Image 1 (tube, rainbow, N blue to C red):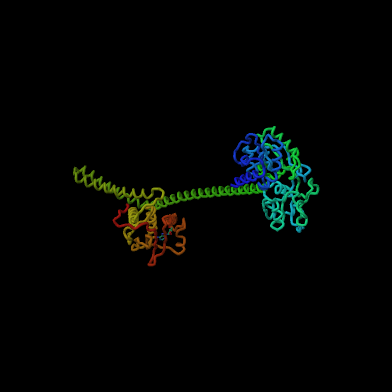
Image 2: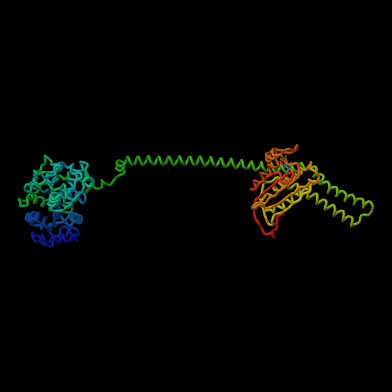
Length: 609
Ligand code: ADP
């Protein structure tokens, strides 16, 4: 939109002032043939607005049309961007622009200067443009460019080569970054008069104007002072910067060389005019490139893109610290991992050792159980032999009676049947005794099964009584509710019962015939079922009681002193308790085994054997 307004303005103004027809003026961004017939287009940077530019450059266009009558020269007044677009599109044949813009286009699209402007106040074409930093005359604190630090700066625009960029370069050499180190930047636009106003009315502390502007004002020293003034300037003005060449006239790649030469000659021959426009041979624009290079802008903007090397140079301390931190962290992590691994393997080792120890203990315990059972049997072996003798003798008797009857000729089928039945029952009795003993002494690992305590106790009592010729009377008082179950190794529980019974028997050896009885009570006690075995034997003293469960403690000549300590560990392995005490009512001892109730089932449930 803005482009169109500008173009329209250009057309209107140009049509009013110049002799060139209005329809010959085209806007820069429209693709168009550069040359149509003998029309030559000159793209001119209109940085101060179209109207001002037309006034400034009309004598130039008129001169060219006059000097080269075979051509029709047309001016296109365009802002920076549109001028660039017109050049890229090839819509113009010549370009007249500021040195900064020229240097950019030279690098970008290869435009080439044929003459440089030479104004009256700049005797050397290479050193015609400079910038002046001003402050209010009363600001004594502002003497050098260094003093701009922390001040508010006014300038026409950030892109302006003739003002801002020239001073920016000077500041960069003082390590002063306008964006970072100034209190603020005020871009007031054209005309440059606005910068003077901003400084005068205090909106800005300092301002940038083009060199020699001040000198056009009457009595300027009364109002303004110049910062960092250069003493030996080629210009006869107060300047704060080094100097650069003036505007060039340049050709494009497609511009015919003959035309370029004719235009160059015409420019050099341009007569004096009221605007003071004069041309000289092309100046050296290296200093402009140096400025862009120093500021890393324009064609050298790519230098700002950081390379790895730049980054490394700039952030080496940070990188070093980060690397050290990473190394430290990595080292710490490795150490922690190493320690964790060490600790884990130590724990695993300890666990393995513990498991091995437990396995050894279990094996030892089983072995001790086994020995204990053998010991009980050993002690009872004499009576066991007697017990087995009975059915064997019975079998013998039946066999003899059969032989006798055969010899006498009285062997009837009934007699054979009777004898055989007797032999069978005696053999079964013997087999029952042997089976129980074998089952009892069998060595095996502990297991857990659901059982009813009364059945286990009755079995143990049957085994015990079966091995004795003169067993004491054993009374079982079962006070347990039916359906109570315990989770036990049946053999181990029977072992405990047998041990209690055997000890009771030993204690009764010297007792009176009245005392020859053992009472067993089965009763519930909260969440426990308890078995109590009571005898009326010799009993125990306090000192003996204190050592009751001590391994190898025995008062018997042939005793091992292991029975009760093994029974205690069996009770504990079942989550139960074992104890021995003197009864409140008379002599003897009471030994108790209490086990946790596993479940309460209905009475109808079949009990295991
Ligand atoms: P052992 O029977 O081989 O001696 P135990 O550990 O079974 O080993 O018994 C340890 C000791 O406890 C016995 O030697 C005995 O002095 C005592 N003792 C155990 N039961 C009774 C009991 N019912 N009456 C008296 N003393 C007992």
